[in-house]
Length: 430
Image (cartoon, rainbow, N blue to C red):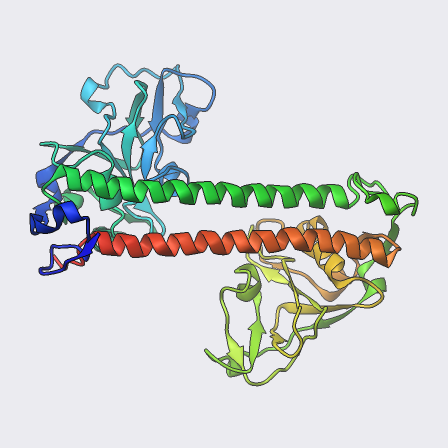
């Protein structure tokens, strides 16, 4: 690639074969795509077992489907066979090269999120509830390029600006038709860009699958290294401890000290000597940080910090953070500090983190607030031998290290992709 940015519709990064091709084409979306009628089938009208026609639900665009939609690689529901599809004409069925947009979202970041249909494998597919189906008028966009075009930051912002609504945001075909889009006039250049980004996406997908495997492996270890179903010993036990007998039944109050965190609101800053451990810090795995210069409730290495309050059906209640550095953290309100005595702190962390006992306090209706006595009464099964505690903790800690490393690798690839997208598309204000 060579650098060239002589005018606003020329990307910073361009493949050598196309450096002299000049500016990209600028057009209204409505001059490039027309919109096809979709259906309004709900989830109740769909199934994952059998049928002749599959259906795109807008929720799957938000959460599941890849930018380049290949029906052989996605799990797509069927339309129930009891539903008549006689009213749908041939033109209503999706074709390769079609763009499908989710026209509604509660989140500005997701409104108008889209996929491009790149492989149908001769299967029948309809575009369903809360979707907009866009089909090219004159085949100006190469297969695979459209998917990345509509994830371009500039175009995404235009779609977001055109969205309307209060609690639920929506985008219409008319408003989409009015946005400006830009693309290389040569389809060969479009395909080159799509191939470049698609190959990177394949790498990202592979690394994501590795991360999922590591996370599944950790879940398996947690289930097998700790007793389950009221058993007194785990399914798997390291050979040197097989004759150690049953694990000890106890409660948290017998193996640890407890203290509630202190309010820091008036002293929280964007920088400071101490990291304030609040629910956002713990639930984001440390990515969301606030600081203070005053430690009202300092923690020490080996403390386990737990979230005590969460919204209905949230995922932060009883989530824990293990302190592995002295004099760095201070504990905010609605977080408790648990200090183990005569017990390996890492194994206590794994025993307490999102322990099913705490999840029973969440009724899914009102905010969950764990009290001191609720936490201290948590039942525990613990191996009596400190060496067995250490062995289990180190095993789980080592898989956590692999997960952290894999997560960072994936994040680096995503940053690389964002940078590549910025370079391969013009930084145009049109």
